Image (tube, rainbow, N blue to C red; front, top):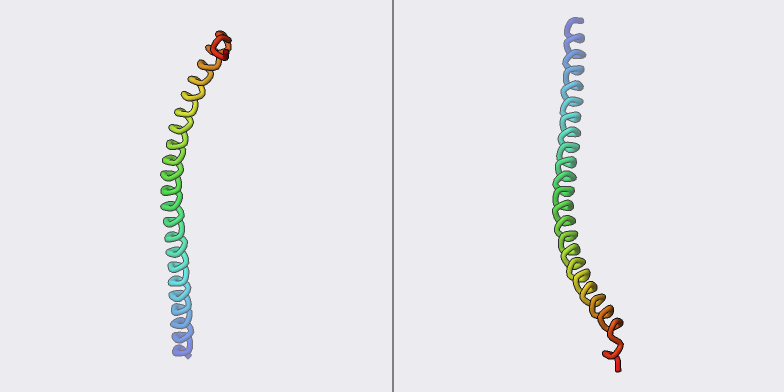
Amino acid sequence: MARAGGITNAVNVGIAVQADWENREFISNISLNVRRLFEFLLQFEATTKSKLACLNEKLDVLERRLEVLEVQVSTASANPSVFT
């Protein structure tokens, strides 16, 4: 009878060990995926900042050109003889 209890105990320990390994594998997979997501977000942030900086530079150039054109139009409007 003691032997049967020992087998049951060994089976329970085996089941507990198997469950522990499955839990560790699950946690490992979750950790890996969180790490991958974090790396993706860091790269996305860097890329986005770079693209926004490039767009900002282009907008600055366009704003300066627009200011020049506005000055030219206001100068031409103040001096109508330019059109004749």
